[in-house]
Length: 108
Image (tube, rainbow, N blue to C red):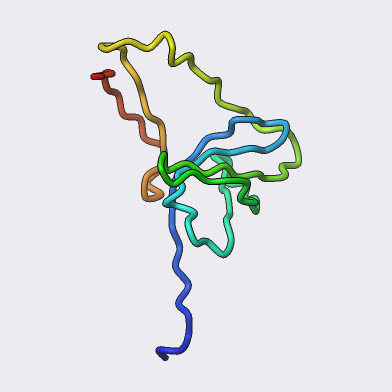
């Protein structure tokens, strides 16, 4: 009926930035207006997440989970060493299709 709210799901990818504290970064547009956020790790472990903060301009969101054990975290690169012509990669799980990798070159 028109008066009933419909439940909508969104899929996205992200990465762990602090495995001890359970911080995860993802896209803001994926979690925007979410009533609940659930993280599914590569081993199919599902964890409820809390929204810590967002930045709409850069389309980033920081989430926090409470894992039973520390999570493996991504290492940060040094953007000061990136140069035009440097190779870069993006790793994700768009549309829940599984792990993907895209390569490119810094153009500006």
